[in-house]
Image 1: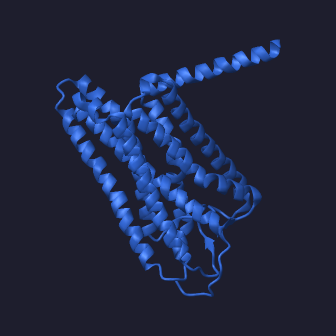
Image 2: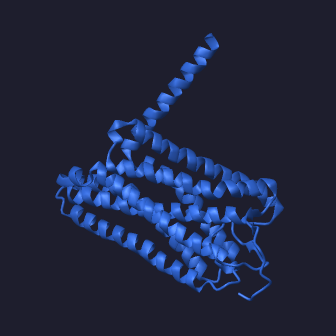
Image 3: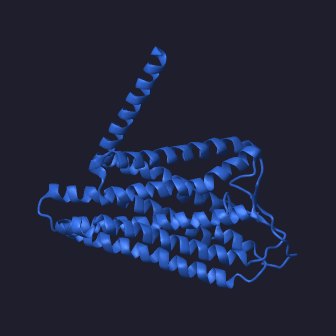
Length: 322
């Protein structure tokens, strides 16, 4: 990037998905709807798992953590975008941008590692069913969550600290709807070689590594399922991991799609549109995938919703009578 006059940065400008004033109400309504559906859907999954004792198993423990991470992930990005659209302002403070980068990286890394942990859980359940309860004990499950969180925090902290040392030019416009690390590095006037090397190194380790673990787990799972003699047994075994496999394909498929669009000659605005898939659409779709394909979750959700309706009806009747 050609060096311009360096300036003390106080804020960045998020250009968003479109600068057309006529599209702003549509974008606001669309993203508000997707955000509310995402938060409500994932919150229902968390409540259903916590309220039903039959779902107090490692698989649903990891699922409830994934739902919490998805809520946090979208809440890092979408509310600020909605505020900017509503106030017709594109600014985000320098500190606010760094905070958004940090939490975005924490939660996307957590998403990635949780999907890998869930793949390992399914591998143990199907390939070593007799030792499942011994291997996937509460202590190990808790340690896996803490390890995922620790790695995510350290990764985000490393990138954030490297950003602090950069100096920026007078052009502080980010052609995106949130502060993405790669877009901020492009605005820097100082040398970003170390930052870029770090990005590629960490992406290789935390991207390829967990994905390889998932592929290995499902290779062993498929091999074990094919050895089951009965068709019913094969279907039952595969149905326990079908939802997770769908979420994995959606998450990695959208991430790879965004990466390929970044590597191609697409404009920054079109790459921003592609990013909507993994930042907003994927967290919104996860509850639907798990609830539609899982009988236990559907039963727990029906029980939870009927309980909520009964309690609300009881409160209304009491307020009317009093």
